[in-house]
Image (cartoon, rainbow, N blue to C red; front, side, top):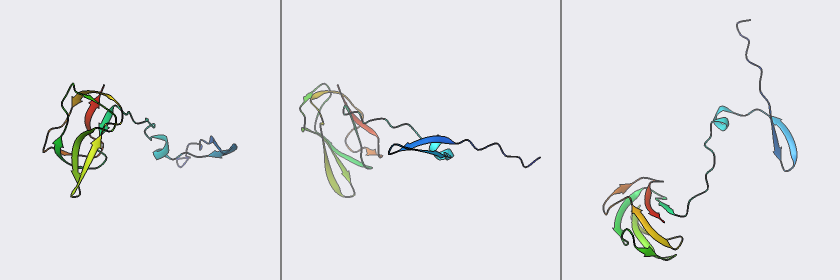
Length: 108
């Protein structure tokens, strides 16, 4: 009786309109929920160094206008505005080392 394990909990999972009963792994159960990207928040897509900040806070920018230059793996990447807006806050300065997914600029 000491080796009794709790009963397995099966979950109903639909794939292409076909129901399946399956077990969920702990990793699957503890996963973070998907959050769609916010176009007003410009994040670093790769670790690197900020070479230049082209815009200033409270400046209006148009879609496609350059915001800053991020150097990663000896390549200069120009991050552009995905939408028209106002620069709400710049979270980095020239020369900063940034990590992947770090918030760089926020638009309003």
